[in-house]
Amino acid sequence: MPMKKDAVTTETALVSRPRALIIGASSGIGAALARKLAREGYRLALLARREELLQDLCTEINDEVGEGRAVTYPHDVKDFDQAEGLFKTILRDMGHLDVVAYVAGVMPAVDLWEFAFDKDREMVAVNLLGAMVWLGLAARLLTELGGGHIVGVSSIAGERGRVKNPGYHASKAGLSVYLESLRNRLSRKGVHVLTVKPGFVNTTMLQAEGRTFWVVSPEKVAEDISKALRTRKQVIYTPARWCLVAWVVRNLPSFIFRRLSF
Image (tube, rainbow, N blue to C red; front, side):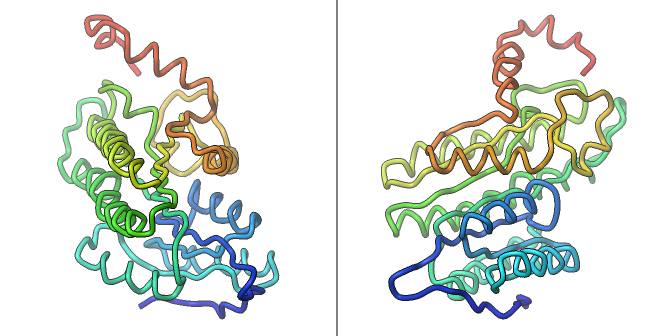
């Protein structure tokens, strides 16, 4: 059942705040995006598996803004069958939704010569299938409303199949293609779909990486997402210089790319 902090807001019949659902909000990019949108005046439905962290974030946001602007909904995105009922509950509680952002993701450490289906299954379930469930529900709602924003956090890792962690690359590549397909369909109904492709971000997932560079904070990614929502960009790399790296990676001949060690 959802856990709520008293939602006493300053909304009136003449002033209605925008409302966002963030899936995967308990830490990292999701938590940073929640803080960012709260400061911009959004009411927030915060969803994640780790209930204690989620409630701490909710309390922090509501204390900072001085009113009950954030509400929590503990949920594991792998519980696919529960998603539709919970989405209806969130929609009833919030009244409407302007933004639905899927930020949930996992990347367990995988050794170079390790082939572990349990890890691959977890990554596909969280990074791709969970997104398809929740963003599919969002797409249906926003199509009916004739507007709104869908945000999916993919990764630079989804540009091409690298040597390390094939399951992660596959899950993020699948997410990027799914978001592109949603965009091509929903743009006809006035719905904006944003694909976010970060490089290395200073979160717990970074522990599974070896050599890193151009590491940015979750707050930087949240700032870039906020800006992209305002300008209705379709795809962003964060930081932006990863766009050039992605172009090079996509265009390297296969016989060269497969010899790279990253």
